[in-house]
Every structure is written in C-alpha cells, then in structure tokens.
Length: 317
Image (cartoon, rainbow, N blue to C red; front, side, top):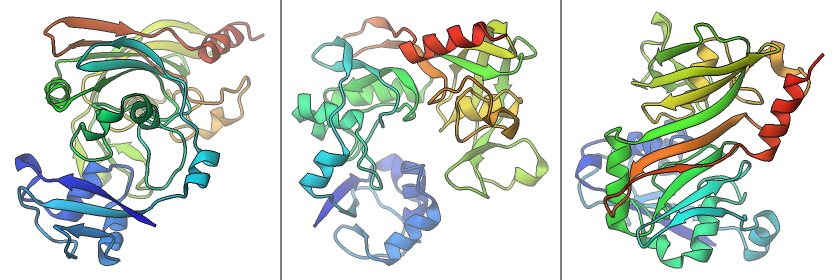
C-alpha cells in the first residue's frame, strides 16, 4: 500500500532543480537516490511525472510516494517512546529527548520517533510545518543525541521559531566528552561543512584544496573545556550554525572525536574501554524567545548513562 508525503513549494524554495531541493531538504538521502526515485516515478509534481532537472515553481506540490508498513509491522518494530515534557503552552512544547530515538520518522526505518509521540498526544500537530512529515519539529537532534528540543503547536509558532533558528538568534549549548586533551582549551572552529564525496551519508569539513569543489555551507562552533582527565576532555559546545552533524564533524576535524560516535571516529579509539553505547552528546540548554514574547532558557541534566560513564572514566587506573 502506498501513502503520499506532500511538500508545497514556497517563494524561497522555487527556481531550483527538484533533485537538488530534495537532497537539501532531506539531507540524509543523496541527490543520486532522489534522481533514481524520480525516474522510477516515485516522485510526482502536481500529480505528474517529471525529470530530475525539473525547475520548481511557487505553489508546486511535490508528492513523495512511499511504501507504508502494515500496522502489525509498525506495532512490532516501533513503539511510541516515553518523552518528558519540560514546558508547554498553547504555542509550543519543549521536550527532553532520550537517546536512541529519531526526531522524525524516516522513509527507510520503522524505528520509534519523537514525531510518533507528538502525533499520539497532540493530533492537530500533523498539520504544523513545511510538509506533512514535519509535525511541528523546528530543529532536530541526531538519533543518539539527547536533550532539549522545542516543537511548535501551530503554524504561526512554527514560522516564529524557525525564523529565530535561521537568523541565529537562539543560543544552543551542548555537553560532550571527547577523546584527547583538547588544545587550545577554548576556541572557535570555523570550517565549512559539506557532504562527503566518498560517503554521501556522512559530512566532512572543507579543509583542503581537494575538497573545495564539494558543495558546502558555512559552519561555526564555539567550545570551551570544562575539565580534562585520563586523556578525555569534557566540553561545553555552542554551535552558531545548524549544519548536519556539525559538532561531531568539527571536533573530529581537530583530532578530538566525540566518545561513542560510531560514524565520526579514529580507529585508535574504537576498542578503548569503557565503552559507551551511544555518542556522548547532550543538548543541555536552549535560550529562545517563545511566541508569547518571553525570552526563555530551557535546560536538561545529563542523562544517567552519561553521568555513569563520566564516573567510570574518571576512576580509570
């Protein structure tokens, strides 16, 4: 059985090739994959088939046809997660995202997601956002990252919050543990980030002439060291831009990969004990103005697994 995900094109999204737009909009899927799906007639515009070089126009409706898992498959493979609500009013919900849960359901996975929780407890949120799979989610956290997330409950709030992220008027603070003693202790990482040519599912910094041909975007990360011990550094990190995997990619580029990161790591750290089942990255604080005009700071303590891992690493012989 097929269901359709619909995206309605606005002014800022028009005048570009559809394959490029989809690769940017769903950054975990490569442009080549979208081209293949367009040729397989799994992507339609205004209910018509098209070519990958089709130029989008304002008002176009992109239909993404997907195989919908059966209800039985969905119940077996994906349970609605338990989520703690930090704050709620008529416009927004602020949640404490657990690790191991996707921010949004994906085409290729039946894993549980924040969007499952939102649509169960706030059914009207299905109509909020740029497309039918957005569910009010203004910003995403990686599956294995925990911490603060803000969600809009209506479209006016969605646009209000999205504009703050876009114009960099929010302050995001993460806590992370990395391998190595970071030098300098405090610093700014100002390296563009683009999709890796060898692995389209990964990001890379543009740090050599060889990579200059890659499509990339500005990325800025500020960090400071909280403490160091046993060849580990505990950092407070503030991304000033919102690129995919930005903190993980930037820190690895300095030679200090995030502990537990299975994607961006160095082999010499892979078998070190103790092991952590996920990346040590936690969205600790979000400072943002909510639609009622109030400037708020929402925070989340380190999760028990991260606290316990810190204790273990501090007491290594």
